[in-house]
Length: 323
Image (tube, rainbow, N blue to C red; front, side):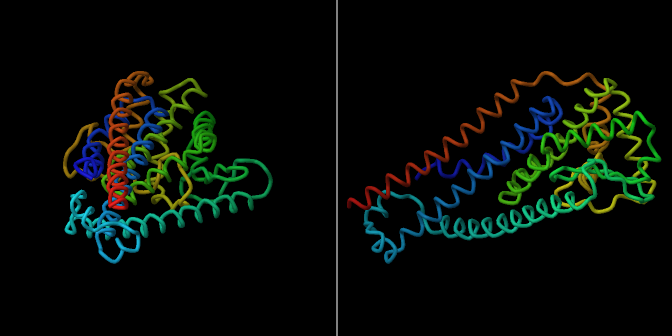
């Protein structure tokens, strides 16, 4: 294994700055697919490389090499991997495996709990109204999926705005947006360097639902007003309750609006809700496909580097077995 084995570790770092431009300039559905795929591919590639480095170090241990019928002399000559790299890689791999597994188990439990809770609501009507003064609304996956909305939110919106709210939440259920969010979050758990990409997936699934609502009602401006009105109502009513882990709401996940860029201002540094409102007040995005193609080429390069590293190690092990 040579340079190719280390390159996939750097691909996520270089991809981070492209996350927000992709989210803003691609059509939301395409952006969601591109960003989610990027999260999964880059995290899987870096994790695979950690496994290759850990294995390369493991077989250099004489006792293990003898058990595997490998020649330590050939391994030492043909494999440039060395202990100061392979040992930390093994520790990181173990950490990633434990942390990602715990997240996966928690998320599966959350989805199962959401499905069970949805099934426990009476009747088959997807709309569930909570007697609660705080303004809130979210979609819960299930059979059937449910749109949960508080009386406080219903009192805030007029009839047209309620229809927009329901169309937005139906889009979450119909397109299974919680799966995109879960995949991106799992990837970010495995490799924190893809967190900028995963954060934008949380934004683009909301934009996807916004555009679906705009397509249903035919009034982008009214959808923008509804999003802004719901955000103000939620803030004035004392904040959101904690959403179920598998749920998606009109305002996105709790805490998604938090600013992380200090005192900088302007739309380019705005939170998700102002960005969504601004996007709805602009023409529907249709371009940017060349950015998706460049991203696809970048991900292909990451995959090829990972495959090359795996093939290099395989060839070294074959020579060591023959030696």
